[in-house]
Amino acid sequence: MIAFSDLRTAAYCPRKLYYARKGDRDPPPDVAERRALAFRYDELVDAPDAAFAGLPTDVPPERYRRNLRRARDRFDDWPALVDPPRRDVRLSGKDCRGVAHKVIEDPPRPSLVSPGSPPEEGVWHPHAVHAVAAAKALAWERERPVETALVEYPAYGTVREVRLTTRKKAAYRRTLRAVESLDGPPPRLENRDKCNPCEYSDECGVSTRTLRSLLS
Ligand code: SF4
Image (cartoon, rainbow, N blue to C red; front, side, top):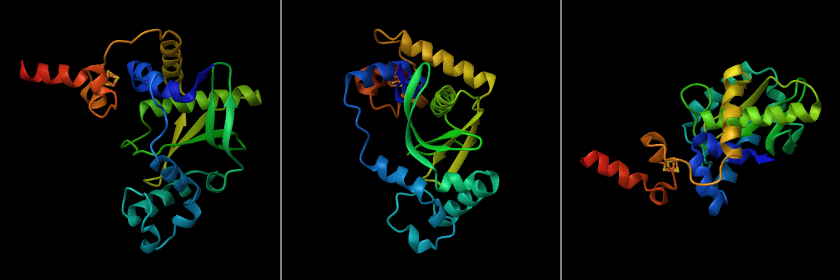
């Protein structure tokens, strides 16, 4: 049984999962603080600027409120997203298991809360793979289809929907196979957008290689 977090890491880079499995995997201390914002939308959606002082938000209050109002207008299940009937729910599917930060009902769908920033549109690829895994695990438990999941970026007040399209399910299966076959360090990505922010870049040797290629 594969952990959602392993799948998400492998979707970013299988080699990163190889390093993560060998080391310390405790999340940084500010992750919990940022995730906690996902349970304060009702209070923040119309809050005055002063209410944002000291909060770990990454956009100005005006933009934060605008993002939340957009989500409120877009999603019919907004009340359940704001005050979810089930929080930090352990899900166990056929292939993967892990925690969904929220589970919403009628129709059921999981929501995952990221401490980071959203892309311009949609969700990051590792989050899409994680969302498919959570939706499939929920579907397995409920013995009914789950067609969508949500990914929240509460430091930005942004909520995005992930539809379980054929393409996304194929990406999920590809990542699953990559994790299942991991028995040594996979090849480096040689992708600066991914490798530069990667916490294992020194250990991986990518920085040195990239520098060398820049100098050659
Ligand atoms: S530095 Fe790049 S190749 Fe190495 S683990 Fe990180 S993302 Fe993967």
